Amino acid sequence: MKAAVATVIVAFAVVVVFAVAPIDMPPVTSELTAEEKVTEFLSSVVGFDFAEYALVVPTPPSGIDPERWAEIGASAEARRLESLYPPEYCGLVKDEWFSPQFEAGGSNISIMSNCFNGLLRTLKVSNLGGNYLYSEPQPATDILSQAKTILQRYKAYVTQVDAMDSSYLMPMQEILNSVDELSPANFTVGNVNFEVSENGDRTLIKWIYTENGVSMEWKRVDLAFRNSAFESFHDTWRIYGVGAFSVINSEEARNIALEAAQNLEFRIVNEYRNETVTLPDLSNSVYQMYFTMLPYRNETSHNPSKIPRDPLKLYPYWQFYFYFPGGEIGGYSGIQVGIWGDTKETIYCNGFGFHNFS
Image (cartoon, rainbow, N blue to C red):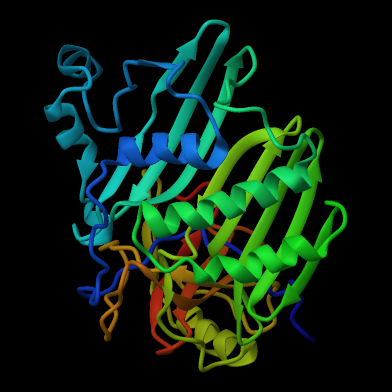
């Protein structure tokens, strides 16, 4: 009897992974602060008029007591506390969040933004009331023309503000210039997968890095509009590099994962049971399989890697869910296994289910 197999999906994995100390970290760039980079982007790229907008005291970053934040406001100490080096990046990646509100007359906007090592990674604007105030009349109201203008201005931003090579944006501009109208699309030119999707009043444009037939969502540029107005921007193309590719195919990955799952010492510990359970034969069980290129994350609950891994590089990651053929065992639906595709190492192997008592 053959096992039922789910389609292999290139998608985000829901797990973080452990590795040894990373190498070749890019330097923190530019003398501008994260706040200045955000407002410069909104001003020079999107075109907002910050001569008119007044800053409302920023919301406290994660991990900072709101009362303490109210005392120190937007002081130098607040900015210092906001510039964190989280342990999940081995303390080597500067992770800055800036979430202020600006207001001017009847226009009130809320911003959520994040910088990695001084590079603007993601930014979203919410219009809380009124129309946006622009420094000059917008060149066009249609989304395609706006996207072309923003991408052109962003190219200058990368060169002037970050002092970085902006040539990676040129193929994206060429693709955008090749289309006559912005409608749902999905095609690849060179190493750029171009996607346009529409959901109600929201339009999302993506340029995703593609190599060796693998589309890497973690390394992309995307631009979103809502009601034909700018909503968000994301650029991890220049932040993430490629660390390695998979040396195994889906069948080889499944065999490695199945062996790990079948040999797992499966122990159920809860208020009712504390025992090791003999697992059923999983060789013909229903399973799901996912593949993605995933950045390293420092998570000590998973097995350490035998090779150095960099939190700003992408690595091949296989994820499997093997379902117990006879139904749940002790509240578990089955065994989940993660595999590094470049070294064939097992990242983790444990039970999964909605009633996971471990």
